[in-house]
Image (cartoon, chains in turn cyan, brown):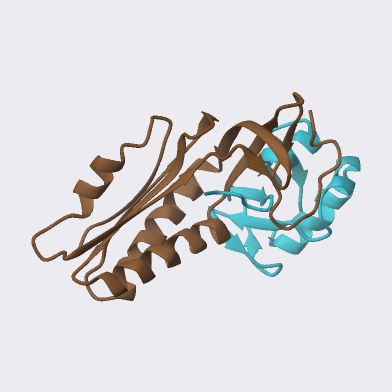
Length: 80
Length: 148
């Protein structure tokens, strides 16, 4: 299945795009998302285990990612 | 109890925020304003650009306001965070907390700003006096190529 991963702030700059498309196996997890992201040359500018949100909630490595889910990589937050 | 959390691209109106939480049972209102400062870690700052994962950030602000309201019985909480380009002395975040008594109001106010900084997906890029720009990373890690 194809999943769009949203990118923000320094991560969007690193990838030169506001999102990337990943090809994942069905019944994938956040760990699979991170493995695929790591294949990208721009990923060397990211921390080893960036935060991930699925459907606008912080997710763990074992969180499921299904077709149509909204997936995002979350750079270190700096509000306030 | 009133709790609200939201993002805005407009100037934050502190008086309006206070009015949102005020009420006859509220003996104490604390207003916290985060303001763009001219110096960060020794570097001269001319302005800050704020961006967010807007849907998630707005939801997290509402969740924090709700949690804060429930942390002490009947706290009213209003949170607003600005997005876009801000100049020095402009308000980036406003938090109004009202409670029957001051002790709880102070405590809730502090809790809200710390939670906001910990978990709301908002980012800032500082603009410096030498013309450079950099994403602020509170974890201390610099992202290569992030300067422009």
